[in-house]
Length: 142
Image 1: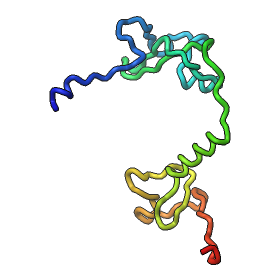
Image 2: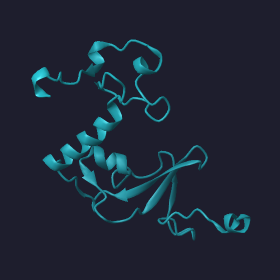
Image 3: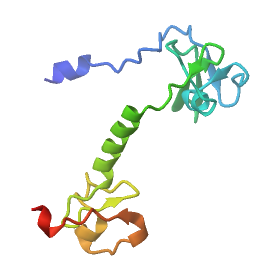
Image 4: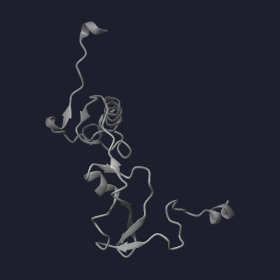
């Protein structure tokens, strides 16, 4: 097993490691024609299938981001009802307490570490404005 671990190498699919991708330092890349994914998103764009053409580094090379050409970027895809429903379903899993009250909070609760909301875990009272109470079941609906 130790021999297999030594052979494993972390590979970045975008980095050819031959120096062909230019590397810019913090605030040295041309903002008029290059942007990171986050900057493209703020402009209402997405990379559009083309790969990064440069890399920007900060903190002595410990942190980096890929840069994309703005002129090749495409508009973001619109949110559809199906996408919105899928996102709401995923967020409901992260925001709902599996405890006896079954509340859905307006923030993500620590399910991986605590397994429930703070009120169910240690009795810390939750602000009533921070959750939606589950619908009350009627006695005749049984």
